[in-house]
Image 1 (cartoon, helix red, strand yellow):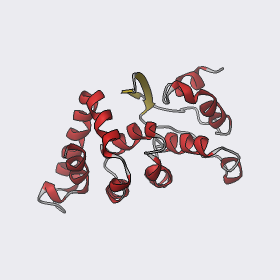
Image 2: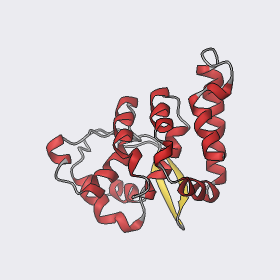
Image 3: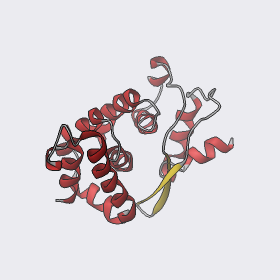
Image 4: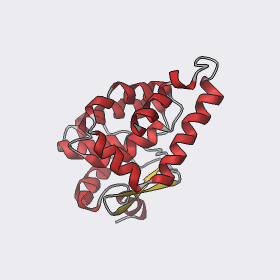
Length: 183
């Protein structure tokens, strides 16, 4: 097993090992830079090391369709870390309503909340009611420092990129998501 695969296995709970290996087997790893640094979160008693950004090519639709439902969710989570915001948004749309079935999606959603692509934030906000809030609360309680960083990023991105469009931070979609998580 390659070092790269061993590292990416740590982005998901251990019980998904075979699914992650299957997903990684259909991804083109031809780029010299596969992924950048990682962020670490606690999840149900385990530490996950999730890539900040990946630089991998998406599999073909034909390859994607050979995966089980759970493997497709693994792949979609992984591609929410893609360097291209359009690809992150596309894969977020595929998993946002599956958080209650696969609660290990939550770290990927929370991380996206701390990013600057407003279209991605809107997808999250539009689907908050479909996510069991107790799963979010449990994750935040396990990852207070990580979550504080996400909150700080939301405020920083609003201040730098969106303040002129949303003079009141309470009108900014990223802040609305954070308020929902904190309520």
